[in-house]
Length: 270
Image 1 (cartoon, rainbow, N blue to C red):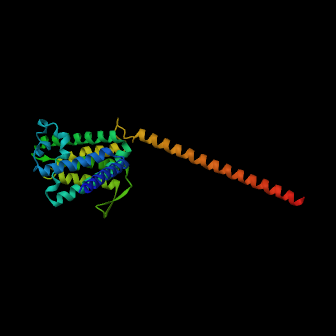
Image 2: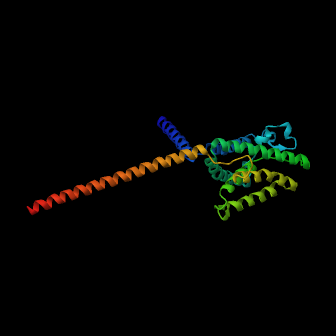
Image 3: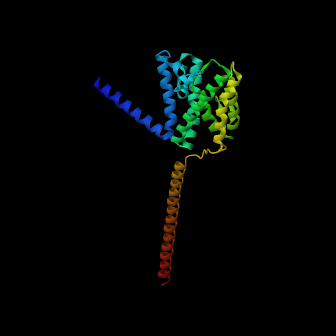
């Protein structure tokens, strides 16, 4: 029994180490943290029967709950039915793919800043739209912030083709259009103009990814780019040094071979 417990403990530690190693290889700790936190909070709301979830939602009175401008992406209940769970799984899978790409390109600090700034901006725009339209609705979930990340990915991969849901081919540019249409349909249900409000920050995110917002630069991750360039340079120098060394050794062997052959011919003549 003790051996079983020891084996189980060793297996657990090994599994944790493998998971940590895998996470480090992804080079996207912020994105992985966002996904893990959303899954954890969704499970928490499922176990507690959505206790305090309404406090996290964006609504017409969000100015009385200012934290809701940042917390609404976590206000979701995907484990209540099969369809919601499938949608949530696909959303997290897409965030893993697109968000990891964007984080590696931007850098983790800037990616975290983009996530929370875009989430806050989306929340503020929705709140303003609700008050202007007197829309008595409450909205939550990660779809809109993930859509902002999607817009960045689309802007940086306009001609790249992906298979949406595994069978619909879309280029990055076309995916951006499809995402806008989906947002209008989802968030404009009952209040069409509210869907337009929801799209405004996404359009800004797209132009930010294109480096076309005055005063703001996407710019990638300078530090990582410099490190990668230096690493490539070091690799290149080492490679060419090795090649040069091998050529010199080959020339030296050829010189010695000719020298010995010349000596042998002279001995034969004698």
